[in-house]
Length: 357
Figure 1: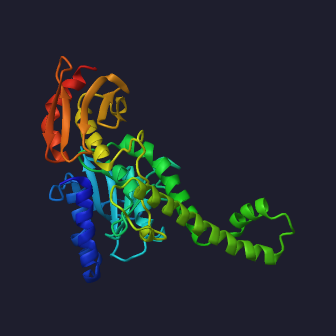
Figure 2: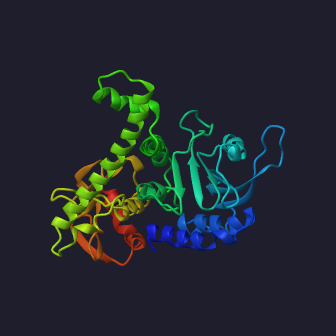
Figure 3: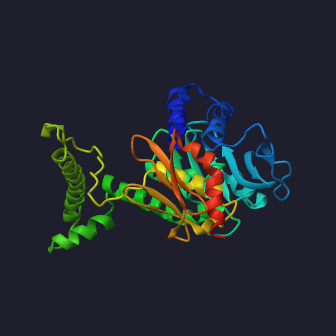
């Protein structure tokens, strides 16, 4: 099963069973353990890989335990602190995670209530967990933009350097999106003043400020509707089937149709890339492995060089394919029934990787 399908499957379960869960233990059993095992791919029955009730001695506090530690080669990679489904994931609820993060030398801390997950690292101060997460997941409102980043946390693709390198950008983009969303819903004085000073030359009295607060909110709502309707019109104009213009509905987010020269990198392509990268890292440094997306295929390359291909993926049609290369760089295409079948071509990918040592 592909990664996005695993997320959707667990999301459906959470939506159906959330109301029946009354305890933290129930939350862990029903939601958190399936996330760790089925979505991230770790063996929850192997304590050397997933250690429950992980003991962290902090100062004078001995024998304190954190819910789960994800291990690799005896080293802690991630720590999970779990709360009952429906609980607020506040900084106060993360106090244990803050303490354990430093002692266990983990790089990823996860605070979850089974439905929502907040992922932390140490961008601000090394070995000290940040107060703000770099990634947030809500299973009842999955943001498609984070799927590729979430995939990096899976067992097969886990690459701490890649995760931490991307964490800074993810953290600040997430915060900016929250601010923009809040301003669209209820613009604050500074935001309103920014616009009113550009369009109104009179004195900014209290009455004027109140007026422009209302006008700004209306203008933002109309702007979103105009953008949505314009995209719908474009979609309608490129369709061979007549569509009644009354189907244009306010506040429905529609993706803009792709232009002739547009190239969109999909979540399937990113998942495929991380699978190939995980395989190739047996031979090459992870930073040497990159991708280039084209309209008809998705290339995984070494040193960002078209003459150093590891493979090509064709994942956006009705059928999926992988093109692999032999020692003479001859290309052979094979059909894939699922993204997991990329692993069947590990020997081909490693053979190609060895050419670029």
